[in-house]
Amino acid sequence: MKKHNFNPGPAIIPTSVLEEAAQGLLEYQGSGLSFAEMSHRAPQVMAVVEEASSLVKTLYGLGDQYEVIWMQGGASAQLAIAPMNLLDEEHSVALINTGYWAIKAIKAASEIGRVSVLASSEQSRFDHIPKSWTLPTDAKYLHLISNETIDGNQWQKYPDVSVPIVADMTSDFLTRPLPIEKFGLIFASAQKNFGIAGCTCVVINKDWLNTRKKRAIPTIFDYQTHIETQSLYHTAPTFPIYVACLALRWTLAQGGLEEMARRNAEKATLLYHEIDANPLFEGSVQAADRSTLNACFRITRPELEEVFLNFAAQHDVVGIKGFPTVGGFRASMYNALPLESVQVLVDLMRYFAQHH
Image 1 (cartoon, rainbow, N blue to C red):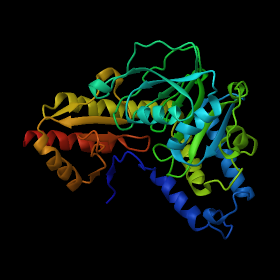
Image 2 (cartoon, rainbow, N blue to C red):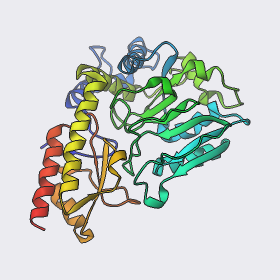
Image 3 (spheres, rainbow, N blue to C red):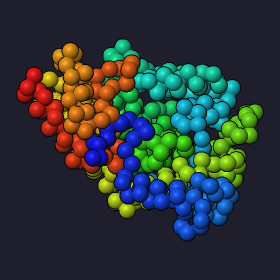
């Protein structure tokens, strides 16, 4: 029986995408080869990479000034690669500490150049996103974690600032339309909303990139290298990009980002309503900054935490255990998760409270 998959990543994938990917892994379009066996420079593979990039542009409505590239190393690598490419000795990167991934971003950027931490919600266990801060005059860009996967907060509205925003969107990429003009660079690992682990999508404003004061960095880490070679400078993670392409096709066929945003809001509203109404559970984040994709919550009787986890697992609900440093529960409701799965979780929470 198929489980109700709330795993935070690697995460749920649409069944139709899995079925087509499985066929492509065995043999791709009558070629006699698995897609994973093909050269990354084979025409079929190059066509998939080009299509995947084109689909990202279509879904976000990107103009010619934006380039889409595919890289390895996940979002963690981008935390270092972005400041390598964008930061110089004359400027700092501005960051707001909103949780686990912001802390990692601060550490990574500090190893490259100067960092200005503008505000932090750490003292309140990252239960909100700080709104009062001032951008320093030497800031090259503002780095944001669009959605904190582990702590469960999300930027519902991106700030208006005088510099481009660089955003780690790993857990809310492709989940809603964006005011794309605010962003100089976006990156996201695939294993949340558009595929399997192994590739990272990077969206770059080329006009802004071309204004940078280029520092000496290894060729392999230079965004321009991958732009010029259409993500094929070295052996690309071909099969993960293929699965990403299939997931991007699925997203477009479902109605695009507007429809994803509608569905995700419906799922989040259903779950948060139960969290707020159920006396046995409580939310971890203030309502205004709650994540639509990663709902973090606790049980008001801690001795029942493992009991509820076991109860949920017995009813085919998996992946809701909170991150070790945070505890509690986390329900990840990515694009492919159906509303029916959220309803099952809500029903279990209600039944559990009635019996405890």
